[in-house]
Length: 399
Ligand SMILES: Cc1cc2nc3c(=O)[nH]c(=O)nc-3n(C[C@H](O)[C@H](O)[C@H](O)COP(=O)(O)OP(=O)(O)OC[C@H]3O[C@@H](n4cnc5c(N)ncnc54)[C@H](O)[C@@H]3O)c2cc1C
Image 1 (cartoon, protein in one colour):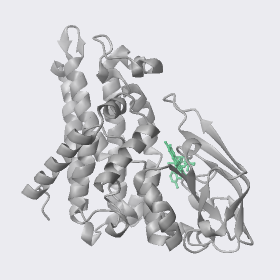
Image 2 (image 1 turned 30 degrees about the vertical axis):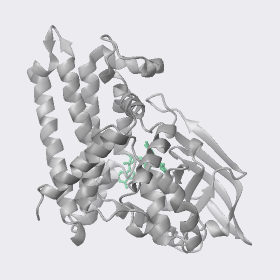
Image 3 (image 1 turned 90 degrees about the horizontal axis):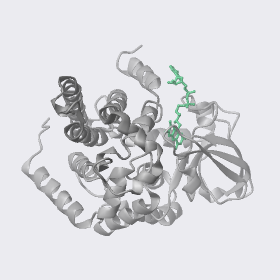
Image 4 (image 1 turned 90 degrees about the vertical axis):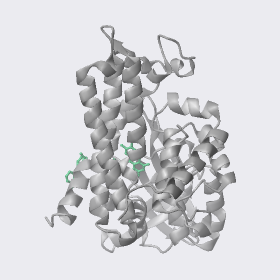
């Protein structure tokens, strides 16, 4: 196992950097840096997806037959790292990393032809309708029903915490199609046009002032049977395949590296009692401790990537990365807010997002409190910390 970046990888990194210098629009970069929240500005994201698509890089992690690249896991890691470091818009995960691979792995030829090109171009957004009130960690107990009626399914039920549902054109939903088998066997995977009559989307206010999360109510929603992915009753299997597809993603490693760098920049720029915070021993100690943890996390991610062909210790490794990465995300963004002191409160006036930087409100202030607040959610979504620990206990320790 060789964890070092070789000459070819370094050359690849330079190529990506040059591409970003030449192609990432400055206005998008600035907005992304200053308004970092749960979601990217949709218009910016779509503009950026078109730029990436023109270069053949909008879905590099996909299989080549569907528009992906033949890059090694390490090259994909470098690509994502450079995009993060340059403050490029984040991929819209539900579209490019969730439903895209599901469609090319399990969808019909007609579904592949219809949806994959538009996902590659970022034409529209997809939302993920899995969680329900009463079915989050215990997802298998979901209750939304889809009854087959001729060439349609009639869907009734409610989803919650559906990110970006209010601005998504399409959604992928887990629904119950059979109550007479054990729960895992009765779940199916449906693609639903969010404009279909009977769908009501209600946004949920968040602690960081946004309302990106939604409730989705489905009342007698008629969905064409051709929108069923794969076989009826196999939805649970497909959903699990999705979770296995990208095992290192939830380490948030690229986010953590970039935000730690930003924390150091803030510590260099901010002062207290006439002294730069970076010269304060307590601040230095916090930064150094976090630096060591981020480095350790990065090496763990690289180790998992190096072992990718063997799929060694798969799920246990993914759970460990998720627990460590999400805790670090919270610790780093909290440090940023601490370093800003009273300036951290500046977030509460959204107008300042568009204000030019000034000595009183330099650019490094914008968006930091929002990031710190929304990072509280990272130990919940994608499998809560307690559930990850249960998985670890079972797989790694046989409990
Ligand atoms: C920011 C954000 C975005 C999200 N986006 C989406 C989305 O786009 N689509 C979607 O479908 N869902 C989404 N979710 C929902 C997310 O998947 C759920 O919140 C998550 O699965 C937890 O479910 P829950 O909220 O129902 O909490 P619960 O499952 O009710 O858990 C409540 C508490 O009990 C603990 N707990 C639960 N079971 C166990 C157990 N067996 N052992 C020990 N402790 C346990 C949990 O860790 C947690 O602390 C999002 C959530 C957040 C916060």
